[in-house]
Image 1 (cartoon, rainbow, N blue to C red):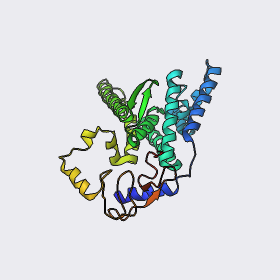
Image 2: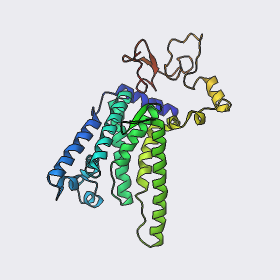
Image 3: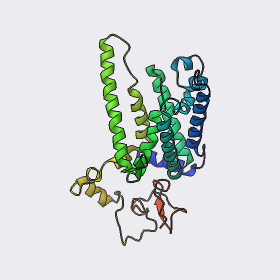
Image 4: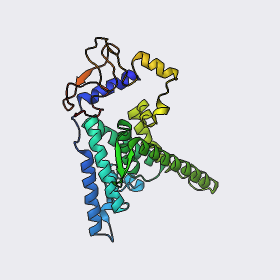
Length: 293
C-alpha cells in the first residue's frame, strides 16, 4: 500500500500542471452567474432547475446534471452565507492547488462528484455540492492544521478545530439519518438513505489522505512521550522533525526530516518559492508551507 501511494504521489508530482487551473474560481463564478440568472427570473428559475441533481431527469437522459449541480450551491441557500462559503472554498482551492498542484486538486474534486453521483443514483436520492465543498475544507485543515482563520472575519480559530467540528456535525447528521431510516422502516415506507451522502464525501477524503487525517487531532492525542510506537518511529526516523545531526546526509526534508540515508527510495527536490535552499521529499514538495523569512 505504501509503495502504491508513493507511485501515485510521483505521478501527481510529474503531472502537477495538467488539468483545469483555478478550478474553484470557475466553480465560484459559475455559481454567481446561475444565482444572477435566477434573480432575473425569480418566478421561474429555469437555469436552477436545469442544473440541479435530479435522479429521475438523469435517468431520462439529462446526464449533464451529473456535473452541473455544484454550480447551484449559491442559488439553493442563503445568498449572504453562500457568498461567504464560496469565497472560503475558493481560498481552500487556491491553497490545495498551490500545495498539491492542479491535477491532484482536479481529481480530488471530481472524484468527490463522481462518488456522490454513483451513491445518489444507487440510493435513489438527490445530491448537492455541500459535502463535496466541505471535503475541500477538511483537506486544507489536514494539510495546515495550525493555520488560523477568522470566523466572520473576527474570531480566530485554528483550522484543525474547525475540521473536528465539521466531522462532529457530520457524525450527528449521520446518526439522525439512521434514526430517520429506522422510523421510515417501521412506518413501512421507503427507507431514508440520504444520510449516506456525507459518508461518501468523507470516503473520498480518506482515500486521498489515509493516515494523514491524524493531523486534525490535538497534539496530546497524536504523540505521547511514553508511547512505544512513537519511540519506535523516532528510532526509524519516520516521525516529523526528528533531528539527525552528523549523519552526512546530502538531502534532508525540511518537513519530516527524512534523508536519502534513512529512506533510500525517496526522491528529494528543492523548492524555488522558499527562501534559501529548502529541500523536501516527494511527499511534501507540494504539501508544505513556503518559508519566506
